[in-house]
Length: 430
Image (cartoon, rainbow, N blue to C red; front, top):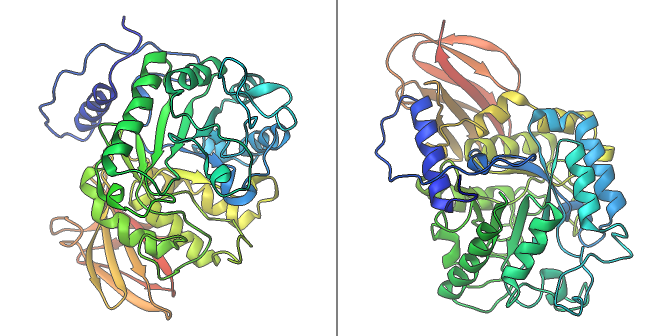
């Protein structure tokens, strides 16, 4: 069997499988040869549903080391986040030695990762988790460009070499961040494709997560469909733990600012290729003057990401996670909406006066229905079954946050707090 197949071949295989599960008939191009499995995971399953995990950046920024990563891996398992689906532990910027070695190879900063990345990957894998790492397609990483970290260790001109290094270390996920004001959309497409090809040539299944937006004034990359190049791609500038900054794809972004960009891109998402509205800010506090989301806003944030079939990459300090935050991040019924194998990104079907109704079809025929209150005061919001795409009849409607289940025959209604949501799974009464 061939060791690799093209990224599009992987996507076609996954889409065809999920379509069969959902009872949908599709005619697809041939998928090519199947991938060879590894002890960590099977290449055919890479990003078949939105990746779930944890990333260092939102809480720790450049302050990363191997003890932190080991502790977070331990805490993901002990907290129940791993059993809820969080698998990837991603080391963001500032993990590397500011200088490549004499052969031009990347190496871990010896004071931060004295045992090296391979040993850390082995530790993470032994926990049943997968390790991710950060790089850029230009000369300088974000921290280097901003002066927070020395050196120029970007992958430009080293793509094949770096991809082989990552594969030899046992890396399972690459966050590849443009993070430069320079370059056109065509430049970005060429650079991201070069690393895609280099990763595929290694034969190792590695989730490829790209960001064409950070630091970049030309936001054409936000609306471009990167599905033929990457498994997931950022659609906005960086998120912060705040509800609304008033920005339209300019740094920093709040939850609703990101929703207003990502909501229009639903048609380009699906199994193996996901819009990425950035990482979760649930449980992240006191960052760059932003105090953090309220519990109500955090539930809304998590629910909206689930409705948008977004990758769920947490960024809080899992070691010191309050129970209320753990309960949000491990709500398996909400996670099931995000991870539904049909892979449809939900859309708003009605938006008026700050009150919105979102619908997401699910693989078993159910519908996820979100009642979203963007206003500053409580509102009663209702949705008809017709709006949810359902025929006349009697259905069960389960509120996925209160876990209350009711019978509905015409409308779904709830009193929704300010900046809050009510999220229902609606299906047959049997």
